[in-house]
Structures are given as C-alpha cells and as structure tokens.
Length: 159
Image 1 (cartoon, one colour):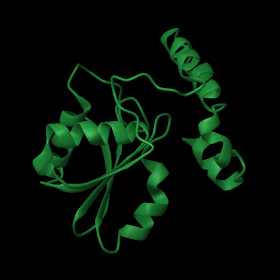
Image 2: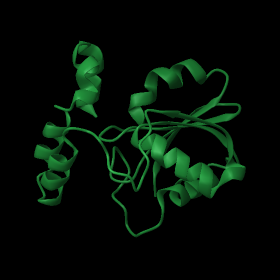
Image 3: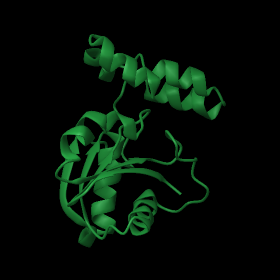
Image 4: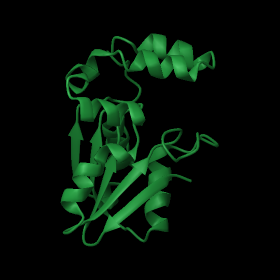
C-alpha cells in the first residue's frame, strides 16, 4: 500500500514526487494549499514511507486504490519528473479521476531517461549498492540549482 499524507479540506490535489525524493518535497506547496484544498502527497513505491513494489500492479492502479481508501473520487494531479510520468499514466488509466493535470519536467515511462547519471545509478542499485546509487544520483546536473541553495539542498539530501 502506498503512503499518502492527507492535509486540509476541499477539492483534492494529489502531488507526486520526482525520482529519489518522496512526498515531503511538496511541503511548501501543501502549506500553501491546505487552507483551501485537500493536499495529498504520495510516496511512490520504494520511496519514503512506501514499501517497494510487492507485485506487478501498475503504480496508476496503486494510486487509484490509495485514493479509494481516502474516499477521493477525483483529484487535481501534479507530478514532477518521475511523478509526472506516473501522473500521465494515472490520467490515461483513470481519466475520470483527474480534474486537471500538471506535469513539470516529466519523464515518459518506457522511454530512456537522458540524465547523465542514470545508467550508473541503475547499475549500482541492481548490484545492491543503494547508498552508492543515491550518492551518484545526487551528483546529476538536474540538482545543480538546488546545490546552490543550502536549505533546499539539505531537504533533498534528507529525502
């Protein structure tokens, strides 16, 4: 089961995080929306407080089940990077559950990533070197601007 943090009341906004992060990356957005919306931040399988995949159930279906468990029939869906890919898949698989869709720097599942560190990260992770994969991932150029902002960089490293 996916971990989904649930804050606020009103129309639901489902936030989906980027690769190597978790739902906490959306804390500032949740703080801004929680007075007017129900802000949901999901930890995708294997990230944050969600366990790794137990079977081959598509992540879009896991999200639908998580929303069912929270009594959410439809949500505005926001995804960054990997979360954007998952958001797009969710919208295609469950279009009646998506009120609006915001994709930021989204990857497309099934297409090769163009990140400098990707292949080495995958090799390290498959070899069981989780710490090495994470450390190498954090050297990627995608984090260049974040590394110049100490508070942002500390939060990313904490995830």
